[in-house]
Image (cartoon, rainbow, N blue to C red; front, side, top):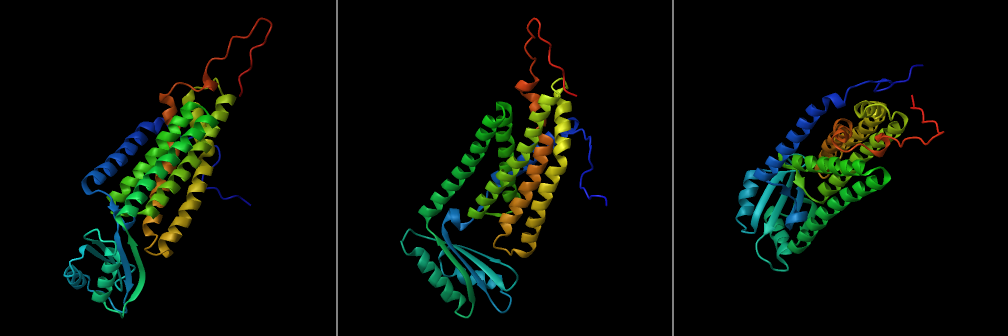
Amino acid sequence: MARFTLIKENTNIDFVGKRLIAFVFSILLLVVGGIAVALKGLDFGIDFTGGVMIEVQAKKAFDVAAMREKLAGLNLGEVQLQNFGGPNGLLVRVQPIGRAVDRDAAAVLRVKEALGPTLDYRRVEAVGPAISAELLRDGILATVLAVLAIAIYVWFRFEWQFGLLALVTTGYDVLATLGLFAVFDLEFNIAAVAALLTVAGYSINDTVVVFDRIRENLRKFRRDPLPRIINRSVNETLSRTIRTSSTTLLAVFALLMFGGDVILNFNAAVLCGVLIGTFSSIYVAAALLLYLPAPKALRPAAEPREGETPPKAAG
């Protein structure tokens, strides 16, 4: 019985030859995301801005415009409303004015009085300004430290060229995914930070597999030119990379369909990040080796001493 495979064995795709197209696409993706962040900014959730979030469910559809006008009359501060999970669901966000200790509790009480007691209050969250600033700082720090730790590990595990490229490509994947939050107006909250860390993990996982095969082939085919070694290595690991990414994407698609709106942004970010990470590990990470000093395995071997036989080339 024939075995089903996504990628045929002995593929010989010229990934190195397409590197300039891949580089241009990668740069454009970063530029588009950067412009979106600069013009629109990130839609920070209450985790990072502070305030109150209330999720309610009714038996009939909400008139969002009328509800917005009703809550605006309370003079609580900035109030945002949107349907959540369907026309019968409503998500209310309030950033109360003032610095009173009980401002958030007072805002929740007044919103509930305005909405009425007959609604089903599914979720009520309140985050103070001091805690939100700390969460934002810790989220940024966690992401930066994770990327640096990954790069340091690869640096010591392989060679400095691989460590540097691990830092560049993982950082690129995280930044490109971050830019998509602004492009698609996704809420950036603690779950988004978790999504970025997940993307960094998947990105380096694929990249390390490719780098490990390159290192192995550098030893086996050290007389071959580097572009040929890179193409051979990426083709040899292509089936594994596609299988891993496809399995992950199937799980993410299931969560997108059945996970509900609460984890929608997390799933969307992981979906985009896995696609970006797969692309960069195949087309970008390895090809960048061509622009760095040759790894030790490709450097000329020392001249054999008198009476010694020079080593034979593999292959």
